[in-house]
Length: 154
Image 1 (spheres, helix red, strand yellow):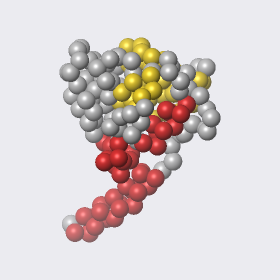
Image 2: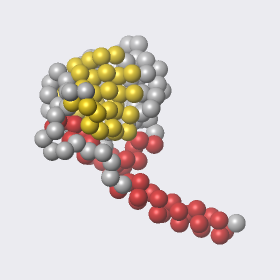
Image 3: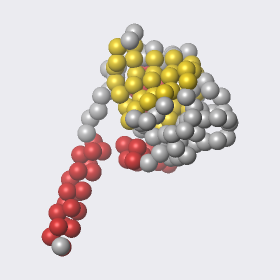
Image 4: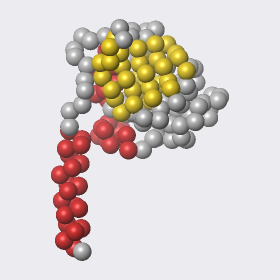
């Protein structure tokens, strides 16, 4: 039994850093985005330019589950079609206002939790927002213009 536990522990010691540092699809510098599609059930965010899928990101969503937001303050992620507005300040590194109202954002992790990186995805933790790593929000923030279409699907 001790041998099995050691192998499991060793496997985790190898697998976790690989997961954390494994490169994922990224935008090329200077790339633009004109549409963002969030698929809540899959916990993914796809970014497009002129209909071409450029990259897919894994996201964390509302800690209250995947139900559709009904009103401000219910801490659920809304569904529908919105238009982005960049925010210059946020407690979460950089942020893009979804355009729903009620401070629904696409945001990074902030300074306090930036160390978590990709591990933040293992648990939904937001108050209705869409969370990415700080590196990912930097990429997307630089690639969009105000008015970019954001579609949030069930």
